[in-house]
Image (cartoon, rainbow, N blue to C red; front, side):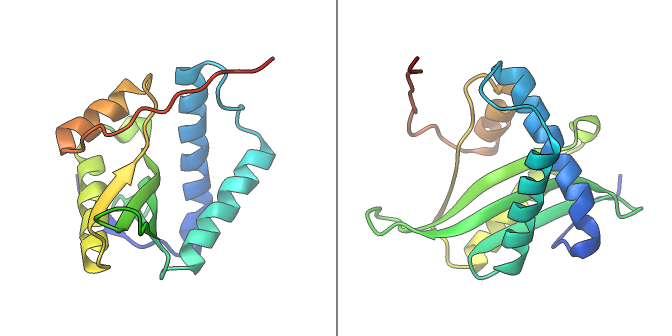
Length: 160
């Protein structure tokens, strides 16, 4: 399978929004009541986030995986952050990472993450961090196998 990792352009945005909607629906299914279902409003929000990332390359990294027909089959959105309270203060943060469900298992996620990490290194980032939900075991296992280490646990309490 011939997959290329590229920086997106305008023509890719609608496919990227569909992929973000797929990610949201996956989280709705996995997390039972934590995320709201996909709606035109949420799709519009995703469109805005993607466009913002694309318009500020000095602050963001956005990469997509495309097949030979230029179909978007995966994407990774991240920020270049400065956290002066950390010893390694220049951090690449993964904010959204998805490979289309029907394309998982072909190494696309690894290719995307490799390219993201290369971009972070080139941008002077000293580490990469991300968040993953406990019940999202497929993603969690991918990150562990890739070499990420769990470093914190977030907790919450719902108030009535």
